[in-house]
Length: 224
Length: 324
Image (cartoon, rainbow over all chains, first blue to last red; front, side, top):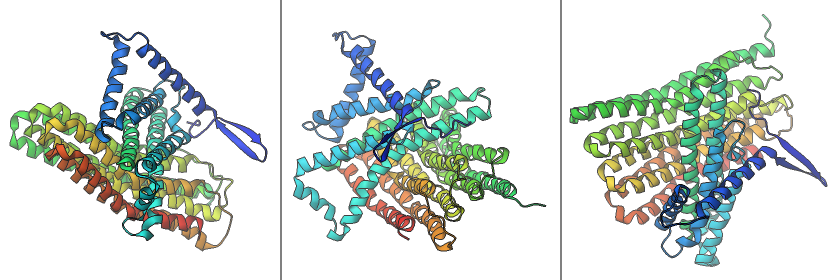
Protein backbone atom coordinates (compact mmCIF):
# COMPACT_ATOMS: atom_id res chain seq x y z
CA UNK A 1 0.00 0.00 0.00
CA UNK A 2 3.08 2.19 0.05
CA UNK A 3 2.57 3.28 -3.54
CA UNK A 4 -0.46 5.31 -2.42
CA UNK A 5 0.10 8.94 -3.26
CA UNK A 6 3.52 8.42 -4.79
CA UNK A 7 4.12 10.36 -8.01
CA UNK A 8 7.07 9.80 -10.35
CA UNK A 9 8.41 13.23 -11.15
CA UNK A 10 11.17 14.60 -13.31
CA UNK A 11 12.36 17.94 -11.96
CA UNK A 12 14.29 20.13 -14.37
CA UNK A 13 15.92 23.30 -13.00
CA UNK A 14 15.04 26.23 -15.23
CA UNK A 15 16.79 29.36 -14.09
CA UNK A 16 15.44 30.04 -10.62
CA UNK A 17 12.38 27.88 -11.17
CA UNK A 18 11.93 24.16 -11.18
CA UNK A 19 9.90 22.59 -13.96
CA UNK A 20 8.20 19.44 -12.75
CA UNK A 21 7.03 16.73 -15.11
CA UNK A 22 4.75 13.97 -13.84
CA UNK A 23 6.17 11.14 -15.90
CA UNK A 24 3.31 8.71 -15.28
CA UNK A 25 0.68 11.14 -16.49
CA UNK A 26 2.68 12.14 -19.56
CA UNK A 27 3.48 8.58 -20.58
CA UNK A 28 -0.09 7.38 -20.06
CA UNK A 29 -1.48 10.35 -21.99
CA UNK A 30 0.79 9.47 -24.91
CA UNK A 31 -0.43 5.88 -24.79
CA UNK A 32 -4.04 7.10 -24.84
CA UNK A 33 -3.29 9.39 -27.79
CA UNK A 34 -1.65 6.48 -29.64
CA UNK A 35 -4.69 4.25 -28.99
CA UNK A 36 -7.07 6.94 -30.24
CA UNK A 37 -4.99 7.60 -33.37
CA UNK A 38 -4.90 3.88 -34.10
CA UNK A 39 -8.64 3.63 -33.58
CA UNK A 40 -9.29 6.59 -35.85
CA UNK A 41 -6.99 5.16 -38.51
CA UNK A 42 -8.63 1.73 -38.42
CA UNK A 43 -12.16 3.16 -38.37
CA UNK A 44 -11.65 5.49 -41.33
CA UNK A 45 -9.14 3.55 -43.42
CA UNK A 46 -11.42 1.51 -45.67
CA UNK A 47 -14.80 3.17 -45.53
CA UNK A 48 -17.43 0.96 -47.04
CA UNK A 49 -21.18 1.08 -47.43
CA UNK A 50 -21.25 -2.22 -45.53
CA UNK A 51 -19.02 -1.19 -42.66
CA UNK A 52 -16.74 -3.45 -40.71
CA UNK A 53 -16.92 -3.69 -36.90
CA UNK A 54 -14.46 -0.89 -36.13
CA UNK A 55 -16.08 1.46 -38.62
CA UNK A 56 -19.48 0.74 -37.04
CA UNK A 57 -18.13 1.60 -33.59
CA UNK A 58 -16.62 4.83 -34.89
CA UNK A 59 -19.80 5.82 -36.71
CA UNK A 60 -21.87 5.02 -33.63
CA UNK A 61 -19.79 7.26 -31.35
CA UNK A 62 -19.57 10.12 -33.82
CA UNK A 63 -23.25 10.12 -34.79
CA UNK A 64 -24.43 9.90 -31.16
CA UNK A 65 -22.25 12.79 -30.08
CA UNK A 66 -23.21 14.91 -33.09
CA UNK A 67 -26.84 14.30 -32.14
CA UNK A 68 -26.14 15.31 -28.54
CA UNK A 69 -24.40 18.49 -29.67
CA UNK A 70 -27.30 19.33 -31.96
CA UNK A 71 -29.75 18.95 -29.06
CA UNK A 72 -27.76 21.30 -26.84
CA UNK A 73 -26.84 23.89 -29.47
CA UNK A 74 -28.70 24.18 -32.77
CA UNK A 75 -28.31 22.80 -36.28
CA UNK A 76 -26.19 25.71 -37.50
CA UNK A 77 -23.54 25.96 -34.75
CA UNK A 78 -23.43 22.26 -33.82
CA UNK A 79 -21.01 21.08 -36.57
CA UNK A 80 -18.51 23.68 -35.37
CA UNK A 81 -18.27 22.30 -31.83
CA UNK A 82 -19.13 18.61 -32.33
CA UNK A 83 -15.57 17.49 -33.28
CA UNK A 84 -14.24 19.05 -30.07
CA UNK A 85 -16.93 17.39 -27.94
CA UNK A 86 -16.38 14.05 -29.67
CA UNK A 87 -12.61 14.17 -29.20
CA UNK A 88 -13.00 15.20 -25.56
CA UNK A 89 -15.35 12.32 -24.80
CA UNK A 90 -13.23 9.67 -26.51
CA UNK A 91 -10.04 10.94 -24.87
CA UNK A 92 -11.62 10.93 -21.41
CA UNK A 93 -13.15 7.48 -21.78
CA UNK A 94 -9.80 6.08 -22.90
CA UNK A 95 -8.02 7.86 -20.05
CA UNK A 96 -10.44 6.50 -17.46
CA UNK A 97 -10.47 2.96 -18.80
CA UNK A 98 -6.73 2.58 -19.12
CA UNK A 99 -6.49 2.06 -15.34
CA UNK A 100 -8.16 -1.32 -15.82
CA UNK A 101 -4.89 -2.81 -17.00
CA UNK A 102 -2.15 -3.70 -14.53
CA UNK A 103 0.67 -1.18 -14.15
CA UNK A 104 -1.31 1.45 -16.06
CA UNK A 105 -2.48 4.64 -14.37
CA UNK A 106 -5.29 6.90 -15.41
CA UNK A 107 -3.89 10.26 -16.55
CA UNK A 108 -7.06 11.78 -15.08
CA UNK A 109 -5.88 10.65 -11.63
CA UNK A 110 -3.37 13.50 -11.85
CA UNK A 111 -5.17 16.79 -11.21
CA UNK A 112 -3.20 18.49 -14.01
CA UNK A 113 -5.06 16.61 -16.75
CA UNK A 114 -8.65 17.42 -15.69
CA UNK A 115 -7.68 20.97 -14.77
CA UNK A 116 -6.14 21.66 -18.16
CA UNK A 117 -9.14 20.15 -19.93
CA UNK A 118 -11.45 22.23 -17.74
CA UNK A 119 -9.51 25.38 -18.58
CA UNK A 120 -9.69 24.45 -22.26
CA UNK A 121 -13.47 24.20 -22.07
CA UNK A 122 -13.68 27.45 -20.09
CA UNK A 123 -11.59 29.42 -22.58
CA UNK A 124 -13.44 28.00 -25.58
CA UNK A 125 -16.86 28.69 -24.00
CA UNK A 126 -16.02 32.30 -23.17
CA UNK A 127 -14.28 32.96 -26.48
CA UNK A 128 -17.30 31.69 -28.39
CA UNK A 129 -19.54 33.72 -26.09
CA UNK A 130 -17.66 36.90 -26.97
CA UNK A 131 -17.71 35.98 -30.67
CA UNK A 132 -21.44 35.24 -30.63
CA UNK A 133 -22.71 38.16 -28.54
CA UNK A 134 -20.08 40.84 -28.86
CA UNK A 135 -17.88 42.05 -26.02
CA UNK A 136 -20.42 44.54 -24.65
CA UNK A 137 -23.31 42.13 -24.27
CA UNK A 138 -20.87 39.57 -22.86
CA UNK A 139 -19.63 41.94 -20.16
CA UNK A 140 -23.13 43.16 -19.37
CA UNK A 141 -24.10 39.62 -18.41
CA UNK A 142 -21.80 39.77 -15.42
CA UNK A 143 -23.68 42.77 -14.08
CA UNK A 144 -26.91 40.87 -13.63
CA UNK A 145 -29.03 41.29 -11.56
CA UNK A 146 -27.24 44.43 -10.27
CA UNK A 147 -23.79 45.75 -11.17
CA UNK A 148 -22.21 45.11 -7.77
CA UNK A 149 -22.88 41.40 -8.14
CA UNK A 150 -20.11 41.29 -10.77
CA UNK A 151 -17.31 39.98 -8.48
CA UNK A 152 -19.51 37.13 -7.27
CA UNK A 153 -20.52 36.28 -10.83
CA UNK A 154 -16.86 36.12 -11.80
CA UNK A 155 -16.07 33.86 -8.84
CA UNK A 156 -19.05 31.73 -9.85
CA UNK A 157 -17.61 31.34 -13.36
CA UNK A 158 -14.21 30.38 -11.96
CA UNK A 159 -15.88 27.92 -9.58
CA UNK A 160 -17.21 26.14 -12.66
CA UNK A 161 -13.66 25.33 -13.79
CA UNK A 162 -12.80 24.10 -10.31
CA UNK A 163 -15.92 21.99 -10.00
CA UNK A 164 -15.70 20.38 -13.45
CA UNK A 165 -12.07 19.35 -13.01
CA UNK A 166 -12.19 18.31 -9.35
CA UNK A 167 -15.28 16.20 -10.02
CA UNK A 168 -13.44 14.08 -12.57
CA UNK A 169 -10.23 14.01 -10.54
CA UNK A 170 -11.98 13.09 -7.27
CA UNK A 171 -14.00 10.28 -8.78
CA UNK A 172 -11.13 8.64 -10.63
CA UNK A 173 -8.70 9.13 -7.75
CA UNK A 174 -11.26 7.81 -5.24
CA UNK A 175 -12.03 4.78 -7.38
CA UNK A 176 -8.37 3.91 -7.78
CA UNK A 177 -7.73 4.34 -4.03
CA UNK A 178 -10.65 2.07 -3.17
CA UNK A 179 -9.48 -0.59 -5.64
CA UNK A 180 -5.94 -0.41 -4.28
CA UNK A 181 -6.93 -0.52 -0.61
CA UNK A 182 -9.58 -3.23 -0.90
CA UNK A 183 -7.26 -5.36 -3.04
CA UNK A 184 -4.63 -4.97 -0.34
CA UNK A 185 -7.06 -5.82 2.49
CA UNK A 186 -8.44 -8.92 0.73
CA UNK A 187 -5.05 -10.04 -0.69
CA UNK A 188 -6.46 -9.50 -4.21
CA UNK A 189 -8.91 -12.39 -3.82
CA UNK A 190 -12.33 -12.29 -5.53
CA UNK A 191 -13.26 -8.61 -5.15
CA UNK A 192 -10.93 -6.61 -7.47
CA UNK A 193 -12.59 -7.59 -10.81
CA UNK A 194 -15.99 -6.39 -9.57
CA UNK A 195 -14.50 -3.21 -8.18
CA UNK A 196 -12.75 -2.60 -11.49
CA UNK A 197 -15.99 -3.17 -13.37
CA UNK A 198 -17.83 -0.67 -11.18
CA UNK A 199 -15.29 2.06 -10.54
CA UNK A 200 -13.22 1.95 -13.71
CA UNK A 201 -15.67 0.96 -16.44
CA UNK A 202 -19.00 2.25 -15.08
CA UNK A 203 -17.98 5.34 -13.10
CA UNK A 204 -15.21 6.12 -15.60
CA UNK A 205 -17.63 6.18 -18.53
CA UNK A 206 -20.24 8.18 -16.59
CA UNK A 207 -17.74 10.78 -15.43
CA UNK A 208 -16.30 11.14 -18.94
CA UNK A 209 -19.82 11.71 -20.20
CA UNK A 210 -20.60 14.20 -17.42
CA UNK A 211 -17.43 16.18 -18.15
CA UNK A 212 -18.27 16.29 -21.85
CA UNK A 213 -21.90 17.26 -21.23
CA UNK A 214 -20.91 20.05 -18.87
CA UNK A 215 -18.39 21.47 -21.34
CA UNK A 216 -21.10 21.38 -23.99
CA UNK A 217 -23.63 23.07 -21.70
CA UNK A 218 -21.16 25.80 -20.69
CA UNK A 219 -20.56 26.49 -24.38
CA UNK A 220 -24.28 26.50 -25.17
CA UNK A 221 -25.07 28.85 -22.26
CA UNK A 222 -22.48 31.30 -23.60
CA UNK A 223 -23.44 31.02 -27.25
CA UNK A 224 -27.21 31.34 -26.90
CA UNK B 1 0.95 4.87 32.10
CA UNK B 2 2.95 6.95 29.66
CA UNK B 3 0.89 9.17 27.43
CA UNK B 4 3.35 9.67 24.60
CA UNK B 5 2.44 10.72 21.07
CA UNK B 6 2.02 7.14 19.88
CA UNK B 7 -0.62 6.51 22.53
CA UNK B 8 -2.53 9.60 21.55
CA UNK B 9 -2.34 8.68 17.85
CA UNK B 10 -3.80 5.28 18.68
CA UNK B 11 -6.50 6.88 20.83
CA UNK B 12 -7.41 9.26 18.00
CA UNK B 13 -7.42 6.39 15.49
CA UNK B 14 -9.85 4.36 17.59
CA UNK B 15 -12.15 7.32 18.18
CA UNK B 16 -11.91 8.22 14.50
CA UNK B 17 -12.75 4.66 13.48
CA UNK B 18 -15.77 4.67 15.77
CA UNK B 19 -16.99 7.99 14.36
CA UNK B 20 -16.37 6.85 10.77
CA UNK B 21 -18.49 3.73 11.09
CA UNK B 22 -21.03 5.20 13.52
CA UNK B 23 -21.95 8.19 11.40
CA UNK B 24 -21.35 6.21 8.23
CA UNK B 25 -24.14 3.82 9.19
CA UNK B 26 -26.74 6.59 9.52
CA UNK B 27 -27.36 7.56 5.91
CA UNK B 28 -27.36 4.22 4.15
CA UNK B 29 -29.81 2.76 6.64
CA UNK B 30 -32.31 5.59 6.09
CA UNK B 31 -31.95 5.31 2.33
CA UNK B 32 -32.41 1.55 2.32
CA UNK B 33 -35.44 1.77 4.58
CA UNK B 34 -37.04 4.26 2.21
CA UNK B 35 -36.37 1.93 -0.73
CA UNK B 36 -37.96 -1.01 1.05
CA UNK B 37 -41.03 1.06 1.96
CA UNK B 38 -41.50 2.12 -1.67
CA UNK B 39 -41.02 -1.47 -2.82
CA UNK B 40 -43.79 -2.64 -0.47
CA UNK B 41 -46.07 0.03 -1.82
CA UNK B 42 -45.20 -1.02 -5.36
CA UNK B 43 -45.97 -4.69 -4.74
CA UNK B 44 -49.31 -3.85 -3.15
CA UNK B 45 -50.29 -2.05 -6.36
CA UNK B 46 -49.31 -4.88 -8.67
CA UNK B 47 -48.37 -8.15 -7.02
CA UNK B 48 -47.53 -9.79 -10.36
CA UNK B 49 -44.39 -7.69 -10.70
CA UNK B 50 -43.12 -8.73 -7.26
CA UNK B 51 -40.06 -10.55 -8.66
CA UNK B 52 -38.84 -7.56 -10.64
CA UNK B 53 -39.52 -5.17 -7.78
CA UNK B 54 -37.63 -7.23 -5.24
CA UNK B 55 -34.66 -7.60 -7.59
CA UNK B 56 -34.54 -3.87 -8.23
CA UNK B 57 -34.96 -3.11 -4.54
CA UNK B 58 -32.01 -5.32 -3.62
CA UNK B 59 -29.77 -3.88 -6.35
CA UNK B 60 -30.68 -0.34 -5.33
CA UNK B 61 -30.07 -1.07 -1.66
CA UNK B 62 -26.69 -2.62 -2.47
CA UNK B 63 -25.62 0.59 -4.22
CA UNK B 64 -27.03 2.76 -1.41
CA UNK B 65 -24.90 0.78 0.98
CA UNK B 66 -21.63 1.52 -0.80
CA UNK B 67 -21.13 4.79 1.11
CA UNK B 68 -21.37 2.80 4.31
CA UNK B 69 -18.89 0.28 2.98
CA UNK B 70 -16.40 3.08 2.28
CA UNK B 71 -16.84 4.09 5.92
CA UNK B 72 -16.28 0.47 6.96
CA UNK B 73 -13.03 0.34 4.96
CA UNK B 74 -11.77 3.55 6.56
CA UNK B 75 -12.77 2.33 10.03
CA UNK B 76 -10.95 -0.98 9.50
CA UNK B 77 -7.82 0.84 8.36
CA UNK B 78 -8.00 3.16 11.37
CA UNK B 79 -8.35 0.20 13.73
CA UNK B 80 -5.76 -2.14 12.26
CA UNK B 81 -3.01 0.09 10.85
CA UNK B 82 -0.19 1.19 13.06
CA UNK B 83 0.26 4.86 12.27
CA UNK B 84 3.77 6.22 12.75
CA UNK B 85 3.74 8.86 15.46
CA UNK B 86 6.37 11.10 13.90
CA UNK B 87 4.55 14.29 14.83
CA UNK B 88 1.64 15.29 17.07
CA UNK B 89 -0.18 16.48 13.91
CA UNK B 90 -0.97 12.80 13.25
CA UNK B 91 -3.43 12.92 16.20
CA UNK B 92 -5.91 15.37 14.59
CA UNK B 93 -5.11 13.91 11.14
CA UNK B 94 -6.32 10.37 11.91
CA UNK B 95 -9.27 11.79 13.86
CA UNK B 96 -10.13 14.11 10.95
CA UNK B 97 -9.93 11.20 8.52
CA UNK B 98 -12.58 9.30 10.48
CA UNK B 99 -14.72 12.41 10.80
CA UNK B 100 -14.54 13.18 7.09
CA UNK B 101 -15.56 9.71 5.98
CA UNK B 102 -18.20 9.24 8.68
CA UNK B 103 -20.09 12.47 8.10
CA UNK B 104 -19.42 12.32 4.37
CA UNK B 105 -21.26 9.01 4.03
CA UNK B 106 -24.55 10.34 5.45
CA UNK B 107 -25.77 12.28 2.42
CA UNK B 108 -24.85 9.75 -0.25
CA UNK B 109 -26.51 6.95 1.71
CA UNK B 110 -29.80 8.81 2.10
CA UNK B 111 -29.69 10.10 -1.45
CA UNK B 112 -29.03 6.78 -3.15
CA UNK B 113 -32.12 5.29 -1.52
CA UNK B 114 -34.49 7.71 -3.30
CA UNK B 115 -33.96 6.61 -6.93
CA UNK B 116 -34.15 2.95 -5.96
CA UNK B 117 -37.52 3.41 -4.28
CA UNK B 118 -38.83 5.47 -7.13
CA UNK B 119 -37.64 2.87 -9.66
CA UNK B 120 -39.63 0.19 -7.78
CA UNK B 121 -42.80 2.31 -8.02
CA UNK B 122 -42.10 3.06 -11.68
CA UNK B 123 -41.72 -0.61 -12.48
CA UNK B 124 -45.27 -1.48 -11.49
CA UNK B 125 -46.58 1.55 -13.30
CA UNK B 126 -44.81 0.70 -16.56
CA UNK B 127 -43.62 -2.91 -16.44
CA UNK B 128 -42.44 -2.66 -20.06
CA UNK B 129 -39.64 -0.22 -19.22
CA UNK B 130 -38.19 -1.99 -16.18
CA UNK B 131 -34.84 -2.42 -17.93
CA UNK B 132 -34.53 1.26 -18.77
CA UNK B 133 -35.60 2.14 -15.22
CA UNK B 134 -33.01 -0.16 -13.70
CA UNK B 135 -30.25 1.30 -15.87
CA UNK B 136 -31.27 4.84 -15.01
CA UNK B 137 -31.51 3.97 -11.33
CA UNK B 138 -28.03 2.44 -11.38
CA UNK B 139 -26.52 5.49 -13.07
CA UNK B 140 -28.33 7.88 -10.73
CA UNK B 141 -27.39 6.06 -7.54
CA UNK B 142 -23.80 5.62 -8.67
CA UNK B 143 -23.44 9.35 -9.36
CA UNK B 144 -25.00 10.02 -5.92
CA UNK B 145 -21.99 8.30 -4.36
CA UNK B 146 -19.59 10.93 -5.69
CA UNK B 147 -19.66 13.20 -2.58
CA UNK B 148 -18.85 10.24 -0.35
CA UNK B 149 -15.99 9.31 -2.70
CA UNK B 150 -14.63 12.85 -2.24
CA UNK B 151 -14.81 12.40 1.54
CA UNK B 152 -12.97 9.10 1.13
CA UNK B 153 -10.21 10.77 -0.91
CA UNK B 154 -9.71 13.40 1.78
CA UNK B 155 -9.62 10.86 4.57
CA UNK B 156 -6.99 8.79 2.75
CA UNK B 157 -4.90 11.87 2.07
CA UNK B 158 -5.11 12.74 5.78
CA UNK B 159 -4.08 9.23 6.75
CA UNK B 160 -1.14 8.80 4.40
CA UNK B 161 0.38 12.28 4.07
CA UNK B 162 3.62 12.83 5.89
CA UNK B 163 3.10 15.82 8.16
CA UNK B 164 6.40 15.52 10.03
CA UNK B 165 8.01 18.54 8.32
CA UNK B 166 5.08 20.84 9.14
CA UNK B 167 4.84 23.18 12.12
CA UNK B 168 2.54 21.70 14.74
CA UNK B 169 0.61 24.77 15.77
CA UNK B 170 -1.53 25.86 12.81
CA UNK B 171 -1.36 22.49 11.02
CA UNK B 172 -3.37 20.61 13.63
CA UNK B 173 -6.31 22.95 13.08
CA UNK B 174 -5.90 22.79 9.31
CA UNK B 175 -6.16 19.00 9.12
CA UNK B 176 -9.15 18.98 11.47
CA UNK B 177 -10.78 21.70 9.39
CA UNK B 178 -10.11 19.68 6.23
CA UNK B 179 -11.96 16.73 7.74
CA UNK B 180 -14.96 18.90 8.63
CA UNK B 181 -14.97 20.63 5.23
CA UNK B 182 -15.10 17.52 3.09
CA UNK B 183 -17.35 15.58 5.48
CA UNK B 184 -20.04 18.20 6.10
CA UNK B 185 -20.10 19.48 2.53
CA UNK B 186 -20.84 15.98 1.23
CA UNK B 187 -24.17 15.79 3.10
CA UNK B 188 -26.16 18.26 1.03
CA UNK B 189 -24.88 17.18 -2.37
CA UNK B 190 -25.52 13.53 -1.59
CA UNK B 191 -29.14 14.13 -0.64
CA UNK B 192 -29.64 16.59 -3.51
CA UNK B 193 -28.28 14.16 -6.10
CA UNK B 194 -30.69 11.55 -4.79
CA UNK B 195 -33.69 13.84 -5.20
CA UNK B 196 -32.74 14.48 -8.83
CA UNK B 197 -32.35 10.79 -9.58
CA UNK B 198 -35.69 10.04 -7.89
CA UNK B 199 -37.54 12.46 -10.15
CA UNK B 200 -35.81 11.08 -13.22
CA UNK B 201 -37.01 7.54 -12.41
CA UNK B 202 -40.53 8.96 -11.92
CA UNK B 203 -40.21 10.79 -15.21
CA UNK B 204 -39.14 7.72 -17.18
CA UNK B 205 -42.09 5.76 -15.81
CA UNK B 206 -44.35 8.61 -16.88
CA UNK B 207 -42.88 9.14 -20.34
CA UNK B 208 -40.66 6.24 -21.47
CA UNK B 209 -40.15 7.80 -24.90
CA UNK B 210 -38.07 10.58 -23.35
CA UNK B 211 -35.68 8.26 -21.50
CA UNK B 212 -32.46 9.48 -23.15
CA UNK B 213 -33.28 13.14 -22.62
CA UNK B 214 -34.27 12.54 -19.00
CA UNK B 215 -31.13 10.56 -18.20
CA UNK B 216 -28.93 13.24 -19.77
CA UNK B 217 -30.61 16.04 -17.84
CA UNK B 218 -30.43 13.99 -14.65
CA UNK B 219 -26.67 13.58 -15.10
CA UNK B 220 -26.29 17.29 -15.77
CA UNK B 221 -28.37 18.19 -12.71
CA UNK B 222 -26.54 15.77 -10.45
CA UNK B 223 -23.18 17.00 -11.69
CA UNK B 224 -24.02 20.61 -10.87
CA UNK B 225 -25.60 19.57 -7.56
CA UNK B 226 -22.20 18.21 -6.58
CA UNK B 227 -20.55 21.60 -6.92
CA UNK B 228 -20.88 22.49 -3.19
CA UNK B 229 -19.22 19.19 -2.25
CA UNK B 230 -16.44 19.94 -4.73
CA UNK B 231 -15.92 23.38 -3.20
CA UNK B 232 -15.60 21.60 0.17
CA UNK B 233 -13.04 19.25 -1.38
CA UNK B 234 -11.14 22.24 -2.76
CA UNK B 235 -11.00 23.95 0.64
CA UNK B 236 -9.81 20.77 2.32
CA UNK B 237 -7.04 20.38 -0.28
CA UNK B 238 -5.98 23.97 0.32
CA UNK B 239 -6.03 23.41 4.08
CA UNK B 240 -3.98 20.21 3.83
CA UNK B 241 -1.38 21.27 1.28
CA UNK B 242 -0.80 24.96 2.07
CA UNK B 243 2.40 25.58 3.97
CA UNK B 244 1.94 27.56 7.16
CA UNK B 245 4.38 29.63 9.18
CA UNK B 246 4.81 28.21 12.66
CA UNK B 247 3.06 30.29 15.30
CA UNK B 248 1.91 29.54 18.79
CA UNK B 249 -1.01 31.99 18.62
CA UNK B 250 -4.42 30.37 18.82
CA UNK B 251 -6.30 32.77 16.55
CA UNK B 252 -4.74 31.77 13.16
CA UNK B 253 -5.24 28.11 13.99
CA UNK B 254 -8.87 28.69 14.84
CA UNK B 255 -9.31 30.62 11.58
CA UNK B 256 -8.23 27.52 9.67
CA UNK B 257 -10.63 25.31 11.63
CA UNK B 258 -13.41 27.85 11.11
CA UNK B 259 -12.69 27.91 7.40
CA UNK B 260 -13.38 24.19 7.19
CA UNK B 261 -16.56 24.53 9.24
CA UNK B 262 -17.68 27.50 7.14
CA UNK B 263 -17.56 25.75 3.77
CA UNK B 264 -18.79 22.51 5.33
CA UNK B 265 -22.00 23.91 6.82
CA UNK B 266 -22.39 26.40 3.99
CA UNK B 267 -22.49 23.62 1.41
CA UNK B 268 -25.31 21.61 3.00
CA UNK B 269 -28.14 23.92 2.00
CA UNK B 270 -27.02 24.68 -1.58
CA UNK B 271 -26.53 20.96 -2.20
CA UNK B 272 -30.11 20.12 -1.24
CA UNK B 273 -31.49 23.26 -2.89
CA UNK B 274 -29.78 22.61 -6.20
CA UNK B 275 -31.05 19.07 -6.08
CA UNK B 276 -34.62 20.31 -5.64
CA UNK B 277 -34.20 22.84 -8.47
CA UNK B 278 -32.84 20.28 -10.86
CA UNK B 279 -35.41 17.64 -9.86
CA UNK B 280 -38.04 20.14 -10.97
CA UNK B 281 -36.30 20.47 -14.31
CA UNK B 282 -36.17 16.71 -14.82
CA UNK B 283 -39.78 16.19 -13.74
CA UNK B 284 -41.20 18.83 -16.05
CA UNK B 285 -39.11 17.77 -19.05
CA UNK B 286 -40.75 14.35 -18.66
CA UNK B 287 -44.17 16.03 -18.94
CA UNK B 288 -43.30 18.32 -21.83
CA UNK B 289 -40.30 17.15 -23.81
CA UNK B 290 -40.92 19.68 -26.57
CA UNK B 291 -39.73 22.56 -24.37
CA UNK B 292 -36.61 20.81 -23.03
CA UNK B 293 -34.34 23.69 -24.05
CA UNK B 294 -36.27 26.36 -22.14
CA UNK B 295 -36.75 24.18 -19.05
CA UNK B 296 -33.08 23.23 -18.89
CA UNK B 297 -31.95 26.82 -19.27
CA UNK B 298 -34.26 27.92 -16.44
CA UNK B 299 -33.06 25.00 -14.34
CA UNK B 300 -29.42 26.00 -14.86
CA UNK B 301 -30.10 29.64 -13.95
CA UNK B 302 -32.04 28.59 -10.84
CA UNK B 303 -29.28 26.26 -9.77
CA UNK B 304 -26.67 28.96 -10.27
CA UNK B 305 -28.65 31.28 -7.98
CA UNK B 306 -29.08 28.55 -5.37
CA UNK B 307 -25.36 27.91 -5.58
CA UNK B 308 -24.46 31.50 -4.83
CA UNK B 309 -24.77 30.90 -1.06
CA UNK B 310 -22.17 28.13 -1.37
CA UNK B 311 -19.96 30.62 -3.15
CA UNK B 312 -20.42 33.14 -0.30
CA UNK B 313 -19.20 30.41 2.08
CA UNK B 314 -16.29 29.69 -0.23
CA UNK B 315 -15.30 33.36 -0.26
CA UNK B 316 -15.40 33.55 3.54
CA UNK B 317 -13.51 30.27 3.88
CA UNK B 318 -10.77 31.49 1.53
CA UNK B 319 -10.59 34.81 3.39
CA UNK B 320 -10.19 32.89 6.64
CA UNK B 321 -7.34 30.84 5.16
CA UNK B 322 -5.42 33.49 3.25
CA UNK B 323 -6.22 36.86 4.81
CA UNK B 324 -6.90 36.40 8.52
